[in-house]
Amino acid sequence: MIFRLIIVRHGESYGNLKRIYQGSIDKYGLTEKGKKQSYFIGERIKKYKPSIVISSPLKRAYETANCILEILPKAKTYYISKLVKELNLGKLEGKNKDYVKRRYKDEFEILKKNDYDYSIFCGETLMSSKRRAKEVIKQLSSLDGETALIITHGGFMRILLDELLDNDIKEYSCKNGCIYILERNNHKYELLKQNIWGRGVW
Image (cartoon, rainbow, N blue to C red; front, side):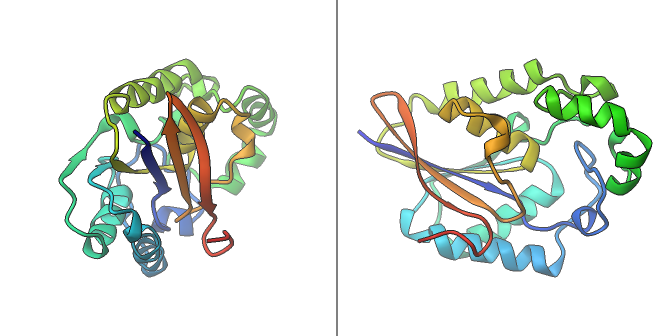
């Protein structure tokens, strides 16, 4: 049977608005725009009737989940999972993005070349984040004929999509409120639809 997986990034947070590297920091909730994006997600995906909802424990993600759940038919299962939380960005966390690109210019170029392995900044290694993604996929492998929704973050979202679709991590645009819909048939995932906050074709 076909299993459908919907992966979304949380709506805009106050950290995003201030251009802060948030990572594992749990300080910022959603802006009004972020709430609007979250309700938009709910409207877009309600026809798929997710029966399982999985959210990161970070405030900006579970606030997104709460908005989405106001729109969706009641999900059979809703739980919080540390497996889908954002990457730990080490000493970048809490710093302004423009400052980081000036202060750590050389290190940032190395970071991009190494598929965003944050160990260069004393953060989470690429191996660790991939291990988390593989565990998520393993836990989903027993589900058939259902639709699951994951509310996560930009960094981890790219890692997870990379593991599911076996593509270059840099191919994925993971802006606030973006939606990826995949289907699994015969143990293989395929990208069905995507929406990058108002620019997708549905």
